[in-house]
Length: 200
Image 1: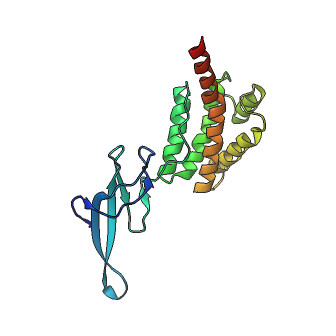
Image 2: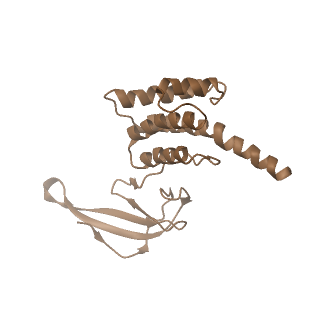
Image 3: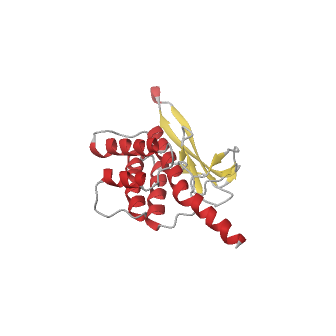
């Protein structure tokens, strides 16, 4: 049982909010204590902290080992995605990383490739390999980008078909590759369209 105190001035901490993604440094929050017995039945005070983000006003919990909850989502926002399912899957993959669900994140990135291919004109119900081939032949994979997509495919297959657990580094790598693919196919074309529209 944690005994929470009211809001007070506490040690300032700098962290990236897991809700809004902004780097903040609040010095007001809640302190909590919990009596636990360690060696020789001696009580030890373990402090817990809740900081309130000054940007979005959401609470961030720090446990006694200074781990942050919710964690920071891996990857970055991508603008210009005009297909709701693609945007939703990318955000779900990022949300999974904030929960430490790295295997789920990698699997979602694999699934995302299929959605991109269909949205770009491939037929539904085809094999995963055929979707990758379609993206490559139709020019939706940038020059020298085949290795990125192949890495998403390999990690996704490993997570999907083998008894394998993905770790944070795996998810970070795949999220980065996926982000670059989305920028190439959605954000950059969207920026060009906006620029042309502004001068016409």
